[in-house]
Length: 489
Length: 102
Image (cartoon, rainbow over the protein chains, first blue to last red):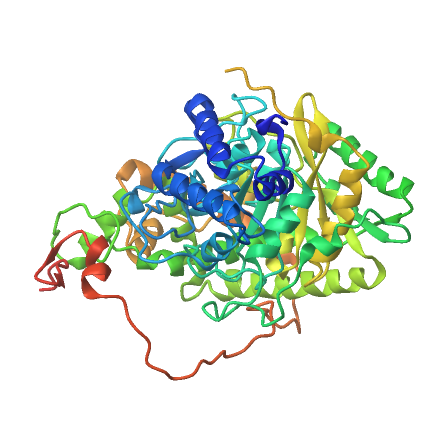
């Protein structure tokens, strides 16, 4: 019997189906793990003890009866706490939704449960997914399993750290400007931001609708491809869902990049990049070259405007989306009437939202207001057009674009939290994929003084298959994904 | 940031008050001052976009080419009222208690 802590989801499903590992045993192991280490890491906001054990027993029973138990049979999965699971608090890491229990499941939850996947718990995040360090949660910061003095990245920091530390095998993240790829990079795991519209957003608490997607986080590309296959594809409940057929992404797990061409934009190695990260990422590009691909250093000049454009769009959409939280129909209510409803709402929103959420809503309201709309929001939408055209041109010549996911490894907890602008700047390499809706993956490619570094691979709209193939080839020919943090706290 | 950059600054306390009203978020006086400074820095950074030549560039609101998506106009089952009211902080006899209007 192999060490259960080191099983991949692929292997675990196989053993469970054979009957040589019980789903219940696997779940209990993960509960033990959470009990032992999550006091230090703070990855989980809630854990579904009884429901998860019951689901595991059902899988085991069905295995004994010789039934088909599904592609994720018995796999413990972490769910970012902005994705609805019926009856389980969905807090979004906010006081505003501390006691909110969704009345229905997100489509992605229905889909994984339909394939035997088990929701183990809800993972911690930056409040309403607004952040790059998972420090703004009302439920406290998450810590990086490689060094608990460091942030895990954000906003899906709980999901990234839970996978890296072996508390779960797979986890859902959501990515509005890098929120899956940043924690994947900082925690040394794999994360995919899908093409916009590839995954249903039904049941995802909205932050910036035109930018965000739910995506997979796992230790390996292979596991992410399987997980992603199960929950992606058209959903009539999401009007922005792409009407294409469901696809099996595991068929792109091909160890071959022979003849592929990559563009490496100098802008992704711009001001502020850590030299150690630069070196590690270039080494990764050379590995792919050694496997028969070619690369060219290129320039994508519009990239330098991506970050301010992203923040204008994200904040504007946030101000509109989060207008729904008034504390009347659901959410935090101070219990005070005030002199009128404006005062009552303003008090609920002041006390229910943390500082970063308030900042973003307020700046978004300003950017959309009369007299400033053209100066900020409209300009950002036009920059989006430039970026899209620039990328489309580039992707005519190249299969994919490569670079560092994050310009530096994980930073210290508390280091940037008092300077919002400094924190925004860390998203420089990830936001473009969201602005123009293309898929991107972060895959572990080495270390900078003991902290993981991620290689980002981006391709054109609908080309998840291509990024999975490149990342898988890289993974198959390197050993970074086998490095696991030594947890001795 | 040097002083010559600062002259573009547009955020004074009155503007912060105006934004509080638009966003329906009441700040404490200390926070008003902190946010004023942070808004100024962030908006100044946003102003970098002023230097981009965007003449004849159309805005992209959405990246997919989807337009209206319709479904059949069929009656479907709704959630029961008790369930819908489950998350309401203050309620009475199947109604939601809101703040007073008058």
